[in-house]
Picture 1: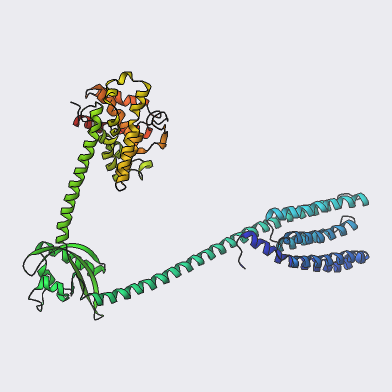
Picture 2 (picture 1 turned 90 degrees about the vertical axis):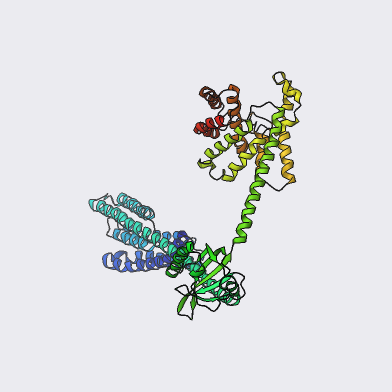
Length: 557
């Protein structure tokens, strides 16, 4: 029988052992009557009555244990039997005046109980010391009746009984540990067997699947060889062409279809060594070669760029052959080149349009020359530095860096909605005018949001929207327009905030000296954990030299 837990197994074992405990206890009680007849014949009849009562009760306990189908009370039944037998010996000792050799019976009872019942060391000690205590009380009462008192022999008996309790406790501890270890090993074995069974089932399924795939592949090869659109040729080990399909003959053999030639004759000179190494490697390892670029010579003398797949096939079940599947990629390469050029031009046009759109805000708010160029470079450098930190490895990818480089220039696009008059009076603005100027974050974000909704979902527009909305939020939550705090602010907006602050502080100096840079970094240090994300600010400190080069490259004057 298998059990889910060690406790379940222990209860079942205890239940089965109780049968032995009650049977042996009842039998032992009657058997000791023979000793009564020999040692104390005068008490034989009295003690026989005690023993018969205990034997009957033992049988009752055995029946109770049999009815305990759920094995809940085995420990209690076994301990009750242990007490019954022990109390018979204690009663006999009491009747004999305390000084009796029947104390050995208690040792026998302890031995039988601790041996049969699966007890822990603590349970053995407690059950044993309880009987020792009862034995001492019995001696005490007997002494008060007879007036004999505790003799050295009685102390000797107590000493040896107590020692024996700890001896059998040691045995119980060893057996308990062994049972638990055995259960764990059986559980591990069961788990290993189950795992092995699952692996065997998976392996059988994989073998079956691969067998079917192999059969299907062979069938497909037979059917498609003569119909495949690509050029196909089968070579011998020395690269002589054995078989080829129709398109291969038309493209590379021309009128020499019946002539025995080596495949190397249609390979350009500079690719022959490459092909030789690939074929030798395939013959040695048996591994397929896929999509290897190779230049071949057509039947009309022109060359073409191809991709060749090389694999081994069996011919007549004896000699291996070399299968070549050849695809002309000249047209594809031309189309890819045109596509890349088109995409590059499209990207350049988009970037130019984005920059032109972003510069509209500069006409409404007087900004230093090359302001947008510096801002996007600062953001790119900060993002690269952050991407090396553990917290941002998964967040900041190459696409993130590319997006923030282009999205940063749109951070103040909403300023086109601010009247010119407000820019002329910025040092004496009313609360309403200040609110109007601050609204440029909402306007800018809404404009980009509409652009995002009108087109396909774009990570660039999504980031530009976040930057426009939130680049004036502060790390401590005292920014605008929504009062976001800490990591609630999108990462791109936090990067832009530090870059924009550095830009504003350094351009305010209107010079390129070191003091201007140090003044700006000192101000950003004071804003850490209040205005700026500490990790972004730290990235700025780590890349100071690059920031200086950017300022120099895109100087204000």
